Length: 387
Ligand SMILES: *Cc1c(COP(=O)(O)O)cnc(C)c1O
Image 1 (cartoon, rainbow, N blue to C red):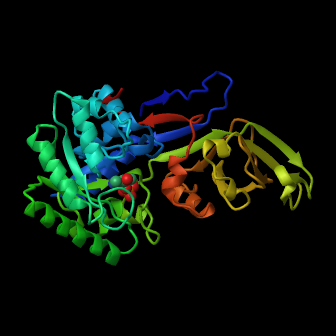
Image 2 (image 1 turned 90 degrees about the horizontal axis):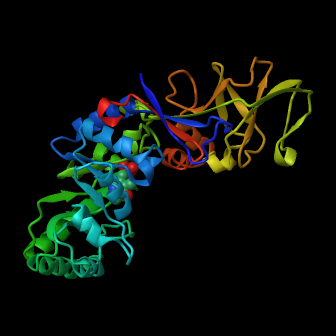
Image 3 (image 1 turned 90 degrees about the vertical axis):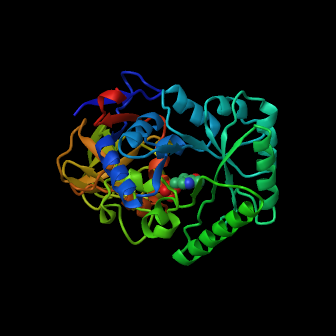
């Protein structure tokens, strides 16, 4: 397997080797699994937030190789970055502020999610030489962006007017689910169908409808419609509380690791880290790991989390600091330079990002997406095309 490191900004020969190893074979396996499940619906792969912390461009390429037909990024700058990387597949961006680069987006053939009439006006004002495809968004209950039921006919009418003027091409109607319960999601699906009927009465003809992300894409076949926007499941993390990624046939993609940088033997009753909230039960060996909350390790997990060193789990002792944490390895052998796995695939017994979500009272999405910029992304399983 070949590996390549994408330099972290703080690169220097002396910086500790903090690494997020990204297994592109695992990712491609997940994308293939999900896109086969969703068929005949197409798969749009969400690579927003730097591909949930995994690195946008390599993951975007791998997604397209493995069966995704389009990509979702939050905003226009991320979409343009994919174009600059040479990606020609459809790219969808849906969060815009009044200064958004609608003209550049149109020229780069970016698909735009549209939630309000002012966005159509801004596209017209940009005066681009080509009309972008727009996906009109209706709010079906999540209460983020998307037109309300009252505003929807006005948005549709404005989009049809823009289309007549050659400013946009009306392509899709879409929404996003609250993932609260299957019943809530069914109500949202009915709202989308109702909004489509309203739009059709106004003369709209949509080529595509989309609603589901990972959760409904997996458990709610009737919500798959023309396309599923898969995100977290493709990174090997379950969207459900009661099933792991492994239960769903998915493989975790990210392994977070760093070397031990200090080892010391201390007596019983020795206090550890800020506040001295942890004391050794007996004489013990302490290992220092150069990862902290500035690297995305949740501070709340201090004292209730474990890491993997030399084939065993050991507890994080005391508070997690900005740049480091201490592990109490008891009487086990550990040396400076030994590898510490914070989370990984889980098949050797190391914690997974899903377990870390439990340590930190959050979801696995947050555990991977918050991994910081000082951590180098190292890619395994790159194809020739990606190199
Ligand atoms: C993040 C996001 C997705 C992907 O969601 P997952 O739950 O990670 O699969 C899909 N659509 C929209 C609009 C999103 O913001």
